[in-house]
Image (cartoon, rainbow, N blue to C red; front, side, top):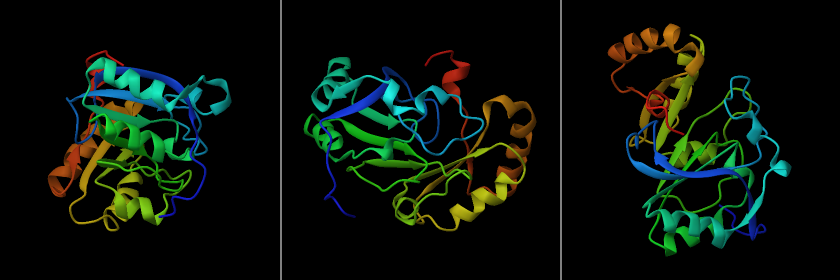
Length: 206
């Protein structure tokens, strides 16, 4: 993995907040979320479309971003987007680690991998497929189920991740009533998978 490209001093931050991780392997854990602006994937069902344009969000220095996390007493930072890997994240993850903060990322894997991560949650999207390096590096595969064909999409990437990668199927929020029963039956027939729910939405927290 090349580390030679420019490391920015500032990153566009759409929002940042201390909350409870509501999805995937770390569901229920306290986490500081840093949502970076910019996305070139364009999921039609995205619930944060306002994150797509990186130019409309304020720029924060690496030191400012890290101070948000350390002041909150959080021990885990989740970098998300948008698509966070549109940015070089080497400097950010290094600074977080220097302050004793665990680094997790949620990514489609469609841009080059940068940063040093304790946990990589890969959520591949049909709109722009993930790069092989991200698939092979993933600690967690989380596939959003929007329609029935997404089960085959999920299995395509489950066959490519490493053996230790955790596998999650998550219903798209607006279609949960229709898709969750299908996911339940699928997981019962394919117990290597687990169900991920957007628990933070049930708890009515960010």
